[in-house]
Image: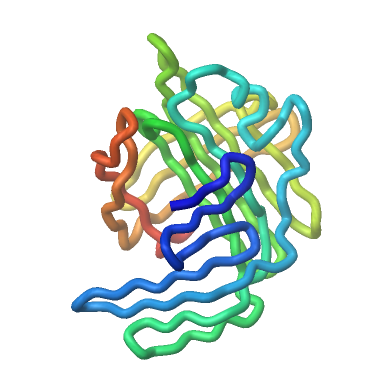
Amino acid sequence: CQFSKDKLFVKIGDNYLSDKGMKIKLSNEEIELEIEVNFNDIKPLDNKFLRPNIMGPVYYLPKLECLHSLVSMHHFVNGNINYNKQEIILNNAIGYMEKDYGTSMPKWWVWSHMNDLESSFMISIAKVKYLVHDFDGTLGFFYINNKHYIFATYTGFKINSLYEEKNSIIIEGEDKNIRLRLEIIKEGDVILKAPSNGRMTRDIKEGISGVS
């Protein structure tokens, strides 16, 4: 296994993932999967000293259990996916990349992302354990026409309401520049493994077929 602490790069055997592309070759008794794609025209966040990534100054807190980083707000994906002899050709498909790293995921969180040909939106709300205390934090962005707007706890964004209705999650919040109301319709959750105290022992739910 090879990886980089300075940029997005992970290589396990012949499989690799970076901010330039991805190559995957996996098989067992049920599936054969080959992916070879390139990422083009990536749009990283314009990081600054007080905002080294989308976490802003919170990133500098020592001993945080979970760190969140935005790799590309919007980019194009080109290449091929072969799944059980069925080929999918990607020609300027829309991509988005972020990463979480650390020893444990937050106590709880709500995360959603959506994009189209010209825009991209992400929001994350979490209760983070820090030393002997917990704190609630929000971070997100809206990208359109090659411009982006960051909203987060550290910019003054406040969550006014967060509640669940049947299969939907409703989020309402605001700062001095925007007012947000978001309804996330949950569909097709699957179980993934996540870290807890440095070991991949926690089960979490994520899905890619929801609607916002």
